Image 1: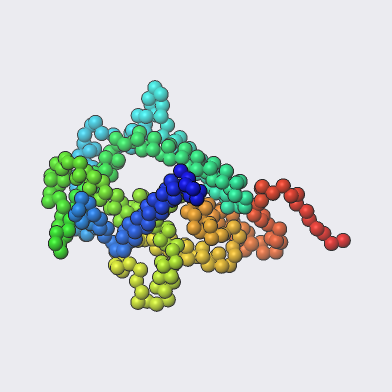
Image 2: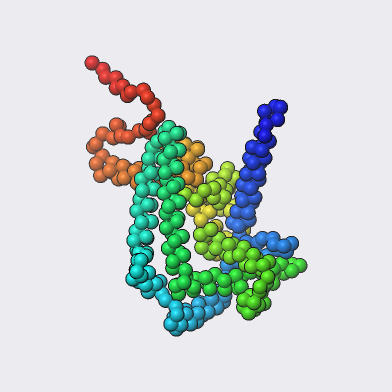
Length: 217
Length: 125
């Protein structure tokens, strides 16, 4: 809405909010690179995640092996390779290798567009090309999400999810006075936590652990 | 590629961190992070972007074709430029090394698709 001086308050408000969000993001990012731990506030308490030490990595390796054997022993579980074959043999086949090839083909198209975008001086032409590249990227992401969804039940994915959860249990700590103490005292306590607050805390911790160890966020 | 507005990249190209990076390379007492070893993945990625933007700012000073301040400040355009560099520029550089005698002066310049003015080539008689 414009006032007598022609100032669009809504627009200014949106711009200020955008800038503030950007500042928040920058501040959070700066906190994430300061050192090899990430501290964050949640429900008035301070938590941190850190890289697992050698002993914890060894513990992680052992539980991973145990879980893998357990998953493979269960006849209801299938590996990624088996699941791909099952999907292909269905009455309406789902071809995962073809979908993966589609992702690569789209990537090649995006890269050709990227070259054109760089070499194009006119803004309207460049914006048009950017739009094309963005819709291709969107298409590519959709194929990737579909693959992830289709393969979500395979042993490899279950194992990956298990490791990510176990890592949260191992490295999530809460500040108590001057010390850092493990937030979940045991894996059972971690697994039995049912309240929504704990779920959100685990989700945030997993996000920060990914930044420390994988950075796919 | 094409992850919009990555705060880590924005920090890496900021004057503060570029200045710190340049000083840290010259003077050994200056640290970028609190920890000197056992870097996290995000710290390693930040160092990668610091070095990359440092190189891009130098290329900007050298007036490299297609590289502008807007390109550096926009993650999307920067990604496009890096792909162009990888696919076109490196190829041309390799060609120049392999075939130094060829005349490269008439190579492709930035295209202005919106201009309606026909190209005119003036030649001396």
